[in-house]
Length: 177
Image 1: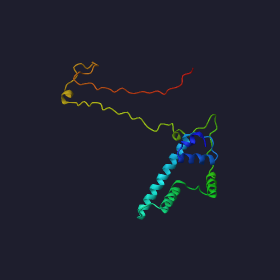
Image 2: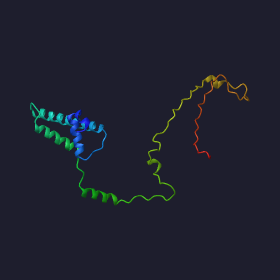
Image 3: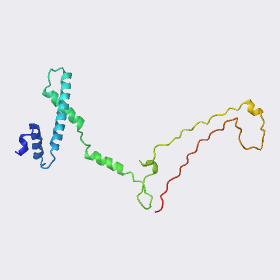
């Protein structure tokens, strides 16, 4: 055995011998720890399921039938068989009957329409509209005529409405260098 093998736990030695039997000679030491973690997690899951099956059957202890049932349910749940080759060929034939769309001739790489890309904006900015203060007209204002009709200045009795500044944006263009 190698120099560090005496210090290794029995399970780690088993994983190392399994790797060697499969022809894996070069691997990092943490691979053994990863396999052990996977192995322990799988065993705990199977034994937990076996305990549930045993309790459901009203048994006092777990027996081999419970463990076999738990393993079978893990295999059925975790691993699935691919469909037969004939089914895949039939699906491929049906899909390939539909012709691809024609591409527009032109230079460069053809890109999909803007609405089908992931970089197109998928939101809209909504700026809150500020309510302008409403000035109520009173009867006194209506009855009083202007003393100076040629004056362009507004009267100081009625407060002026404040205007909100408009936001203006321009598209950015590349500057020539």
